[in-house]
Length: 193
Image (cartoon, rainbow, N blue to C red):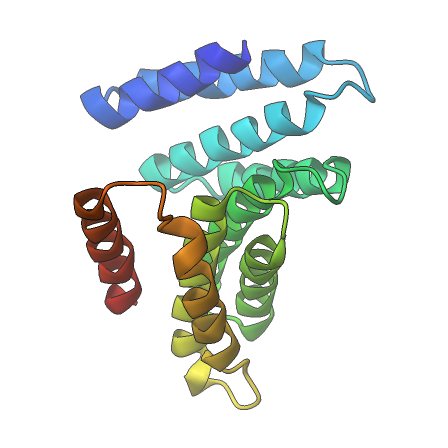
């Protein structure tokens, strides 16, 4: 069911059929329901369901889907042990759901929760470098938007983290042309925030 949920979500991205998101949520729920407590895949099934709920919220604007995305995302993070390479991805997905919530409410507390999730994903030394870089971009982006709030976090730490992650994401094991394209793509994203 986990793979089916991801495939339905991907198909929605390409085809745009809202029924695919309903199928993604249903398959994700079946995957989480069929996974016993303590199973090693439980957190990845939950983060996949978080993505399905968030995608459906973005289409339908049903607040219940956003609330479910956040609650399943939190469960996924709680179940993913420190030091696991998948933890940064769970935090990143939770951060995206919390960012959507902040954009809806414009409340400082929601902003702080989203920043914390992205920062924790960025700081996860065991996480996949590209996901850590994405999380850092989102962390910096939110800190820049937070400057209107007194006492909000500064984007400086996030920008410093971006600089330290560039050589981790853009490795010397790739061809010079690939590295150039990678830098242009990744740094282009950083400039957009």
